Image (cartoon, rainbow, N blue to C red; front, side, top):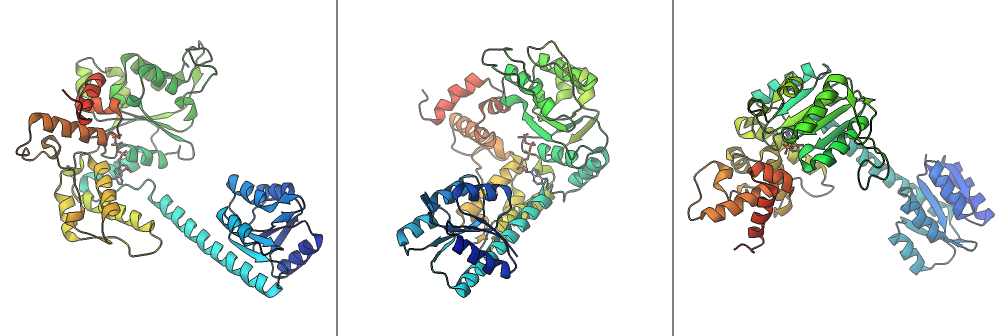
Length: 448
Ligand SMILES: Nc1ncnc2c1ncn2[C@@H]1O[C@H](COP(=O)(O)OP(=O)(O)OP(=O)(O)O)[C@@H](O)[C@H]1O
């Protein structure tokens, strides 16, 4: 049984179709104009629209494009009195499924409608299966190694304690994935998880992004804006790269953690928020706090619960689990054709590599292999690891490469890891952003 809308300006046709389809057990609505039709599609769940191409002075194709423009997805069958192939083809290009020519033979009509609905049910089932699979995997955390298993046990224990969490680990090691899992398992799961990368923004922007601003607080602040702390109210705020925030932001953050209070930029008023903060960093904040670069009082608050994620090379068993997971995820996307396989040789190659970019690097290497592989079998040769720097691999320095070449290759690699985010890349490289920009000119071949 389906919900069908008949759009036709001739009352006879509407009546006949309605009777015919209702006899088959469908729910049928009808409309004689485009306005009526659009209103029904907007209000009701419609599976199939049977659309006349001539609606008095109106053009049925307009109805079709307007339904699609609104992002509605019923199947659409064009009904036309004239066997106008050109128009029918245009209709199919605009997203119609099929077309029928009047006068309509009842048997044929019912068979065609039945087929369309069957196909729709199948594709909806497939979509549901995919969504379910995505939900099951989200957030999926591979944990075959003993160290990751221990982390998972800890996450289960601490998720419901409503305290800040500090997650440390190298870039790409899975800090955000763990943060999401903590949120999912916490009492705040029904509320929002808001993530912000602290070093992607300048100090002023980060300040107003986190705490909001009032109208006129700075040039361009034409309206008041709530900050991410307010957006995450009741939920969790994930602050990535927390090691890079300035002293004044450290002070503001301490205040939220201590008092649950924020003050939007340019405002004299204080607002209360109820947010669990999960912070992440790839830097050693305890050492930074010894030298005074990082506030100790803030670190004591943030680091009550600390989760240290080891680099992937120190928990190699996870490489297998992650490879299987990414393989399964890739194969779920395939409608027809053979699913991908990864040979034992290829798996060994993945296992042996040191993964300086951790899980993120493993994902992109696998994605590249799936995209470039000739057939469905991924062998060692199909695994292309960009092992072009000594610093990356931790192995023997490459022979015959000059220091300059190594530097260029390393910068390129770090830029790739940071997805071309210069602020992040310069932090990782330990140089200023302007120095990085100068060095990036090498990559464009304009070095001197
Ligand atoms: N254990 C894991 N299981 C499954 N996927 C993982 C795991 N760890 C990381 N990933 C995936 O690897 C990618 C990088 O992970 P994530 O963003 O959590 O790393 P990160 O440590 O927060 O990185 P950064 O320091 O650069 O912000 C993501 O696509 C994430 O889904």
